[in-house]
Length: 300
Image (cartoon, rainbow, N blue to C red; front, side):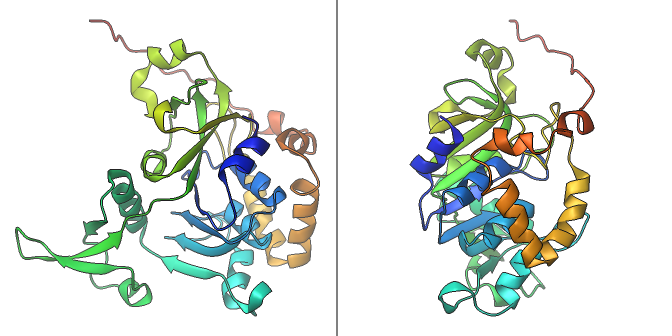
C-alpha cells in the first residue's frame, strides 16, 4: 500500500498506537502522514517518545502518552510534550494525559500483550516512586516463593507501525542493527503496518531466515518508503541526522517555529517524496559506506 492508504485504512481517531524503534528505524514518515490526515485522540505508546511524538503532540493528534522516558536524545527535552503537560490546558480544557513506566516495564507490557497474558511480573519498581504515580503498576505474590513482585498490565495496541530495512510483498520483515521491541509490539497489536527501505523478492528473505523479525502472517500492510525513518537512521542505508536532533531543541522551544516547521515539512507536502525534495543534501550528507556481513551456510 501507499503510506496514505495504509494510515487511512488502519489508524483511526482514538486508537492506541505504537510507532516503534529504539533510536534506529523510527518511522517519521508514518507519523507525518498521521498528522496530515488529522488524526485525533490517539493514545501514543513508546519506550522512548522522541521527536516524532513531540511533533504529533504539537499537531494535536494525542490525548495520552504511555512511555518510559521522554526526551530529545543527546540534545535536550521535548518542549511540545512539556507544554502539553505543564502549561495551560489545551483544546477541550485538558492537558495531555501521561502514564509512565520504566523501560523494562514497557517491554514487559508489550511482552505480555504479545503472549496474550493479562500482566507481566517484574522487580523493577522496588524503592521507586513510580507505583505511587501510576496506579496501573500493581503487585502479586509469587505462588512458588511467596515473594511480592511488581506487575504491569498487558499492552495490546490497535496499531503498531515499524520501520525496517526490507520485507517481501507478504510482509515477512527483516531488521538488523540496533533493535527495540519491534517484535513484541507487532505480535501484541491488532494491526501491523511495516514500512521498509526495500521490498525484496521472497527468495531474499528465505535465504537469510534468522533475520526475519516479523512474519507476514501478522502484517496488514507493507509500505515501500525509502528514507522513511529520517531523521533517525536505517542501518546500512543512511546515517542518523544528528544536526536535526540538535536543531530540534530550539525549534520545539518556540511554538511559532514549531508550527512553521510542521507547515513546511509535514502539512505543506503531500508525501515523503515531496519532503525529501526539500532536503536535497540528505543523500550526500548521510550516506553510509558499505560494511557487508559475511553470509552463513544454511545447508544440511
